Amino acid sequence: MTEALTSPTVLTVILNWRTAEMTLRAVAAAELAMSGIAGEITVVDNDSGDGSFETLTAALAGHPRIRVVQSGHNGGFGAGNNVGVRLGLRDGSRPDFVYFLNSDAFPAGDAILKLLEYLGTHPTVGFAGSFIHGPDGEPHITCFRFPSAASEFEGAARSGPISRLLSHRTVPLGVPTESGPVDWLAGASLMVRDPVLQRVGLFDENFFLYFEETDLCRRAAKAGWSTHFVRDSRIEHIGSVSTGMKEWRRVPGYWFDSRWLYFSKVGGTGYAVLATIAHVAGGLILRARRVVQPQVRPDPPHFLRDLVAHAIRTLARRH
Image 1 (tube, rainbow, N blue to C red):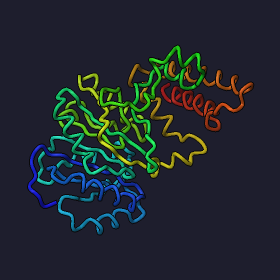
Image 2: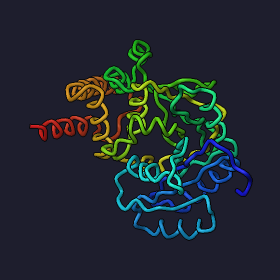
Image 3: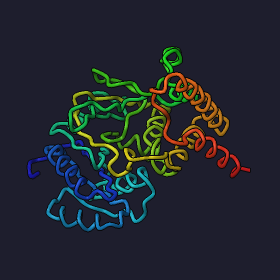
């Protein structure tokens, strides 16, 4: 990357947790995609404790536009990314844009430029995210509506009549065929104006994992900044490499923590309770369906029990 670079500046932040070799692939793809774009790449090792920091530091030592830093504490996805955002650029200045890229995501050569150009021609858009596909080319669903009590009921019931009735509340939006507005986007490849972050705040570090992008996009929307999907910015994404989500046998406690926190921020404790009741009601409908239609996909093991137990424990701690 020796060519003359012009403004605006982009700070690419890549968070690593125990996936050093995968992260190096993501960095290499990002470095190519940053060609001709002013800015830097910051790799944050989220206190992996497995030699990742040393591996990344040694491998990237000869790359002047890339720096590797250590978070010092694994506070989760949002907290780790915030470390990179707070550092800004090496000269102490703030970038014009921050680009979040997952460590298992690989941008096409023009993917970052496409996001940058889109934000440049849409001044009221705060966030722009890419079209995500798997290694097999299959599109990933990354465009969503904001969750609500109604969407909790619909998503848990997974019943045709209910889904049709509440179609305007369904959270997944499918894969849009054109660029345009959505409520929120998964954070595998997400660019944001730095002034938006300075105004609405960074990721809420009370979310350890999950719902942090949802919350950030919602805060931005309340401040007047929309989120858009950019179809011609393409990213290959493996997905769930560092979280282990694909191998979950039981939903972990931090997912329930994040869910409760999100709904509490939307409408207080009462709304979190309502969303939980709605989910349980939908879940009971699903169970009734499975009596006569056992082929219907079940919830993860013990999900409803864990959901209710988490709500009871959380409410008990408040009194």
